[in-house]
Image (cartoon, rainbow over all chains, first blue to last red; front, top):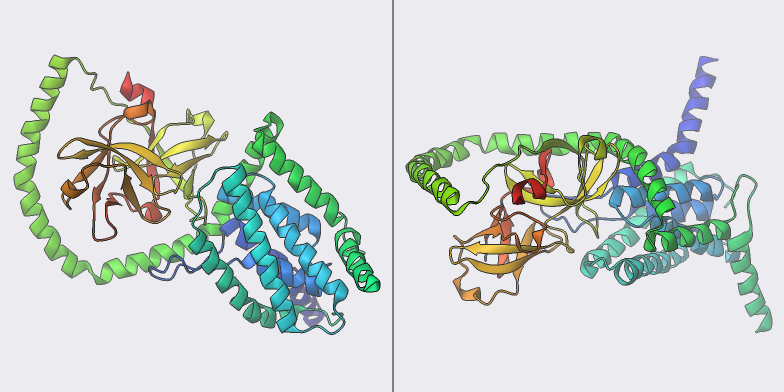
Length: 167
Length: 280
């Protein structure tokens, strides 16, 4: 009985782990600052949202993704609704890929992921600079996109253990 | 050809509109709602501002809680590295104390003389203590460099107040909620402060670079700015009072770069002061 309860708790924790990670990263604006390499950062929410919208859309609902975007806007001081829009646009790319894919492949997924984050960051930078007149450093965003893209492979491998077999 | 286009349209339509069993909201509806929110934010709609203040109060507290372990780890690493350098630093500090003690006597004399002269000229020298505030969140965003403070409108914080650390300028309050507020740091790309460069009293503008230093803009006296040059606020424009120390010129980082006196990535307590009180 006790063992069953333990297994149940563990499976529940593993089920909510991506959601916990997503909220932890938006509230903490997760990044890596190694020594003086402050430019070394990546966008964990993008990876989580894309991966789980692609592999199991029921794992993290769109409503929760929308709210996480609002939290991110508040934490970083961005105009309300901006991150939600960006996150949901990533979901669109993932859902499109899910609809057209018959045989999933990490390399195909990663190419669409790269297009999705390029689109999301371009829209984000355009809205911030053209509508809200906020100055931005494009080099930092480029580095962020590159690192996020390469880390997708690592996180995809890690998340694979939590994914149901459906996709 | 036509069937390929149809497949694309069906896939896109499905991506936007199809809801799975556990999804409660359609993706398209949420996207439209977020665009609507951005539009209202751009118009500075009053309702949105009230919602924002409410959300801010909750999310700031939550964010501070979530960031706590990371903050503790960072502090421990800094503490350890400082501990390892303590002997070397002690030697340097002893030398500095000797030099400073001799300078101190000079400064006391000059300060008294300055006070007397200000009284003769009629300038008000009263200074307020300011409000001490704890830094709840000091996240380095890719676009905005700002800090969240644990004092808000209920403590008398107003938009535009200056934020100091050990009497050095570090930022300005840009958003006030009931119990919290946000201050933009002087390192932010959008920060432009009218400054005076001493010695020489050159007027200029100090801009943030998005990194941990600033840069002098629009200075005609580039050649005269050496390493000993100190940058103070000039008070022009009325956003900051004059004479607040900001940093010193460090051409080693970049030409006309200003190294801030405060380490903006390590702020834990700051002083918030009203500019009006000082400028009356």
